[in-house]
Length: 350
Ligand code: DON
Image (cartoon, rainbow, N blue to C red; front, side):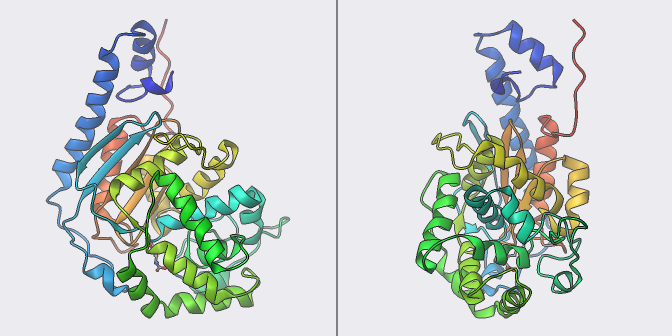
């Protein structure tokens, strides 16, 4: 199946149709119609949902409008389908962990993250200190059973980005995020200040990670840069584009910039699949099959490899720290469009 033929395909039917109707515009128009229809339907269905609560342990996040709701689906050939508010920025929060991990993998190889931090789920909350104390090593490899998507692993991953000083490291981190989003992003200063004033727990985690050898030096710089990366402002469209860059084997489908080597992307997606929604990652994967990542700012990105990236922004969260509307909308849309990469579809009889 060509990449263009996937949307709206109920698998085999689209494969047959794509072959038969090459050059006939109606199939693509139909596929585009299906994608927009699915996005619009999810928006209408969940717009009035009143469940969950904004994160408030970072005071600035409690002030964000809980009614903000935007959906953006971006295909691997750069088509964008949206509903709701896809312009208002929220802080990227933990979704940044994916891109800093990806940057370390791109710069230093797949082994670097696996050996220093690990690629196993902790099954604990994102900022668990007990999980740091309980961490074991994988028998025979010496790799820790942790990952770069929980705070201890993420702060450690940030410390691994190479640079002569903090400014140099920061330019690389924001540069990688910019390339994935396809535009120049900037830090939401109110969120950065609010989180810097209240992130004593992350500081304790940073110090602990130095003590245990995950961070080699200067844990304070690592925590500060981590806090800054979590405060990057993004809208639903940016996040959809970032997800689509991963779906398109590391190439931003609109700017066409190859942000990451294609052979390194599956490693990133694997960690997202096992740990992207923290202790609810299993449930999420069970219903969608999609590698994904949430942030306490209200965003979730999800990736259907070779097909599309999708993002939703909606601040109210569940107890695990994942946006409720985002989980529901992405599940509906992806399932309507056949986005589950674990679902094989039978071939048509010829
Ligand atoms: O470190 C923190 O607590 C936040 N900057 C990020 C946490 C987060 O987004 C967890 N995600 N669901």
